[in-house]
Length: 222
Image (cartoon, rainbow, N blue to C red; front, side):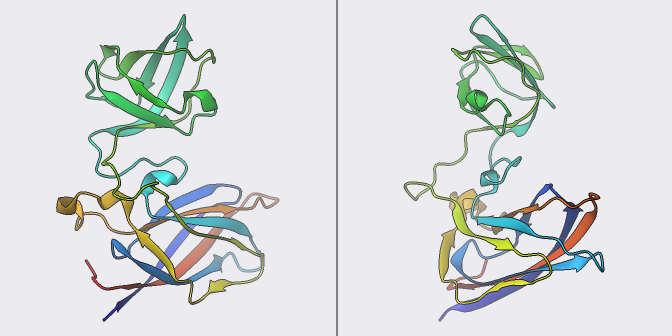
């Protein structure tokens, strides 16, 4: 017999900014109900778009859970086929380790690399045929657990919130299995879906408050 799991999560942020947050939920199940409501400020109506994922790193600016190391990129410099990559914190990588970069403004840098040499505790050198210039954006992570599903799709649901209205959908019947929990020993550590919400720009740019309510059906609640 299926169990029902419901939660309400509040979030906020400036308009025209991307918000990413965890939606606690069973590690696998069916997304059944989804409601997004603007809670503040009174007298101002915001709008936006959203995506619901079953993997943290599918959100812009976030990395996977349950990886050995991850963080943000300080800089990437390119010199004669070698990239020097500087991280925001000690990387704990050694020569031969592989890692992934995503969300760089220079799209060519968003690939998997192998460490050629360690320059310092916070930087490495990799060989690359990329001809791009310097870069100061992006996040990185060591490679995650291999998902059990193939292909490893992550998008569960998406939609648009119209200004002055509440977005609500019922009987969605969107099945999911959290990709951050592919190791059975870690399944109780991290469960949930992930919301990526982009509020449309307002003039002037002001902070908006939102609330998301959702219900999942599952045969096992972790």
